[in-house]
Image (tube, rainbow, N blue to C red; front, side, top):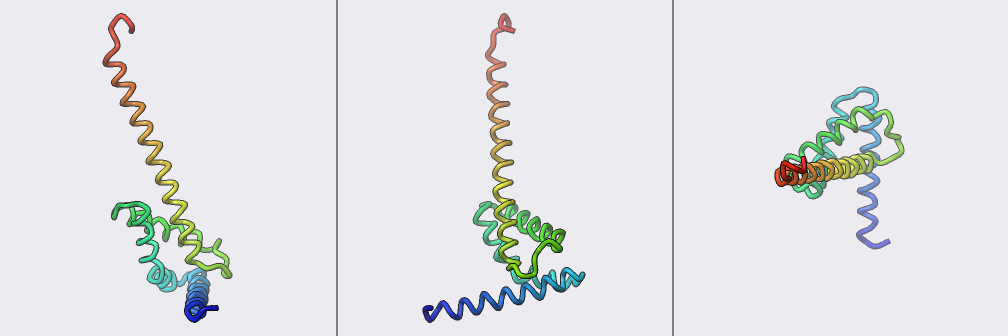
Length: 127
């Protein structure tokens, strides 16, 4: 292991252990523990969401949604899994869903616009 890899691995393990303790406490109803999880991971989720969504408002919405989902599904987070990983999976899922919805809406608008354009140029005899 390189001289940098060991300290990074130790930091990662320390983060996983901190997450594990906070998740266990949050599952028992400790709101301060969940806020601690938000304090630890909120900025990272927001930064990633901002890069993926390319909009401050969308990044804020995605970050709120990720933590809302995390809070409502806290009982389904295994204690032996890194909480941060589950947050990023939720963020990725939400970005992909948002892009699919946006793409679908954009395609619908284009079809509607094309249909309106065609109907304006049809002769009265073809109706």
